[in-house]
Amino acid sequence: MPKSIYPCLWFDNNAAEAAAFYTSIFTDAAVLDSNPIVTRFKAGGLVFMLLNGGPKYKQTPAFSYFVYCNREAEINRLYDLLKEGGQVLMPLDKYDWSPRYAWVQDRFGVNWQLDVEEINNEQKIVPTLLFVNEKNTEVGAARSLYMGTFNNSKELMDMPYPAEAGLPAGSLLFAQFKLGGFIMNAMSSTLQHDYDFTPANSLVVECDDQQEIDAFWDALGKNGRYDMCGWLADRFGVSWQIVPSMLPQLMQDPEKGQRVIQTFLKMQKFDIRTLLDA
Image 1: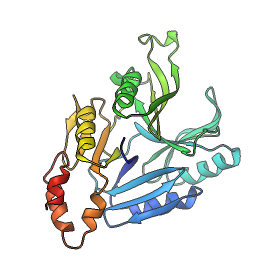
Image 2: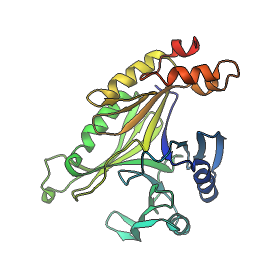
Image 3: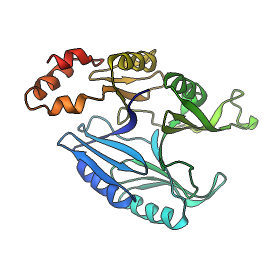
């Protein structure tokens, strides 16, 4: 099992500003570390990595962050703060699935789904995938791939489409599942949308040894796309980073840090032995 899984969000050189905003509005939130390239913070029981990657990739609603707020006062507070300078995709209101819910794209372009209901876990913010257009029947298949890849996985809930939706039997509207200690949501839509998954949101998998790197690289990248520096896109288009957990320590080494960086910039899959020998 990997050391940890957490989301990475791509920013156009304003990652530290965004992290300061998020840690100011979420309770029990704090910046963990920061440098000119990456800022990491923790909020809602979840670690976030914010990457200053430049203008290449933009956030889309295909990847959002579901916040279980527990109290009406809390959802009202977060809604007001997150919508300022952003865009309301679904206004705060009562819906069939929740007594109080909203979907907001904040001023940095990051998508948040707010729900007044509670989750029985310390992880109160849950990364959420939205499968649209020709992928809208793939929630179950994606869940099977991810649960089959990570040990100690568990289905938490699912909601099939009703028969009147006209989709193949067993197609899922919503699913929640756990990969080790990491909770994810996946949902789908029968509406047409002009967006899909992009590398602007990825999931980082920290691995303690080469065997883990090899296994996750092969399983998640099969029939997808392999990119540079440990990045891949799975067959559904969801981006992952398969990285050694020791990488930050190697990069910070005053003697060999720059050599390590120059070495991994030439790699697709990370090779720990090559990094150690840099």
